[in-house]
Image (cartoon, rainbow, N blue to C red; front, side, top):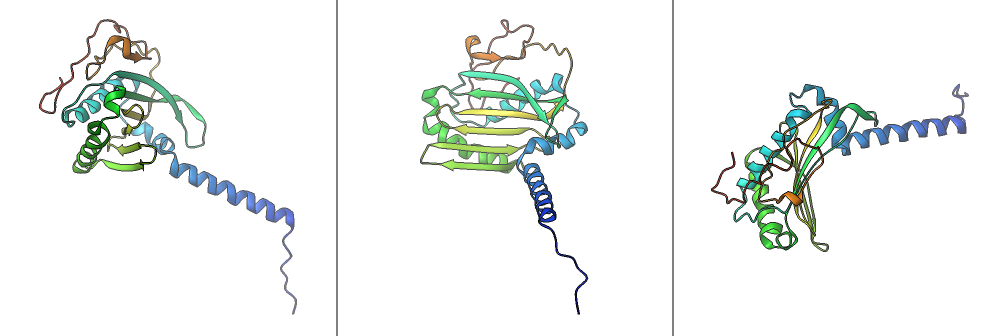
Length: 220
């Protein structure tokens, strides 16, 4: 008895393979690119570009409060990045804001910054139900990376290598046209010449840096 099924042509096999590969790449991209996931939920967040900077500074200050013998920071950077949509294209209505604080080179190499602070942050995030989503430990190259996801959609990135740093990113937030912010004083004794604000805030040359402080001191 002969089967009624027809042999699958080489062209059909190639087409099916292409579809399977495309589906796999799409799924893999969605799983490995957190910006895409955040982009799907961005409209549900109350925060936008005009209010994100202050919140990023507040979250960074909370982290600094947990760091014993805090030596201060050397450099502050604030900027906006593109928000990638779920289809891989760049959104014109949303942006990602990133705040970065860097230690000086000497402190970056210290055991306090490289080892103690990493342990302190892990304990703090676990205690406050902040999910650690990535932990890289390349001891041969002296590179450590900790990434944690705040329930409100913000992401912490702590890196200890040549120049150690604390970064806080907003995830995709609503862009605000003609945003004209007032400058917020930096944390940890950052001097004006090292305050690399890229948002063009109005009174950039006026605010003084908030001083370095220990675990028992507070920041208003």
